[in-house]
Length: 510
Image (cartoon, rainbow, N blue to C red; front, side, top):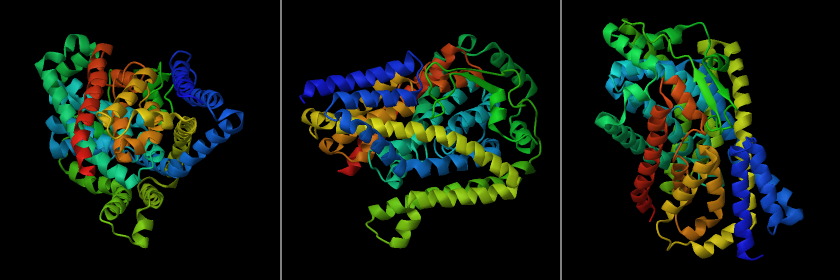
């Protein structure tokens, strides 16, 4: 088959998938399967091999990341039930103060909290962030909103066990330890620089309270200034409340139309509303100085299993880089073993702190959430397999090679265009990785760089087709215009900062 029909049919399949998702509101899983079928039937796969390739791609990616996603989501569900996010925000304020909270919270969300289902993480942390914004000053709302948006979206695709990061690593055959280490190297400066630049722009007049904040938010800031509002009580009351932090509680706080897709954040056409008048009881004061110190051991205990799992994975990557080979170390550093250790440890801690019943309830919710994520990730693998088997990689290798100008920028641009069209960070990253995976050898760059470049490109232009956009608008008390600045502009800036930072990082691989 000549090059032109393959290129045309691949373009038709991708455009048709986008149109089905965006225009006709077809579920992303169904859309991706239909696109895969069309592409297979119109390329050299034909009737004989199309379904076989789709199912093989589905199974291959599940073999790579299926257990990892399930273990990660289950850990996150138990951490959510224990109220660790509220404790963590309270602790961050105590350690860094409210002025540095945007940086510390964004870093924490983008790294440590990526095992928690994104919408749940947003619903729980946004009221606390909104209450904290009153202590920061008149720019508290935009600073906290942009910090949350950047941390949430960057973490999905750059840091293990973020769903997008796991999928990218699987499609491009990147060891998870390597993805974890280099993802951390990239995301930490990206978040710090992006939040600092957005803060600078807000101070130079980018933010207009009258048009960018909801009336209730502006009024609340004025009242907070008069009353000396403190955010610590919000964390304390939620932490000691008898109401468990369940998804039903989250649903009472926020409602969505065309609910979140399997990555929990990016279904096109999604909208959200939230209660804006009484955010997380943030107007009450906590004057007990011993409370922050007493909660620290509990917080460390809650996160210890997850931290141990990530440390085990990272140790394996460091050992590989140092050319150290040990069978016991390799076994313990295997991501499946490491995350299983983390999950078992989290279950034990959860039973000690909450009892067996609440842990079982959290696990049940985790299974429900992980099922959605697993199917979308696997179907993305099916499309990637069909794209590769259909001959696109061979064709692209004739046009792009190691001598291509700025190959990482090419990867970034492809993912960015897909995200603008689809509106889903995870789907665009997975699709871009599937298209580019056959091209990786000819580009002459390490697959982890391609994975990170695809992840950063998929962050560009998070806009009104994203559920995260509307949740941030409602929960942080912004207008649509304000959310375009904090979410769309903020995350797009992070995308650009990340690809710029990735260029000097890539030099370390040569």
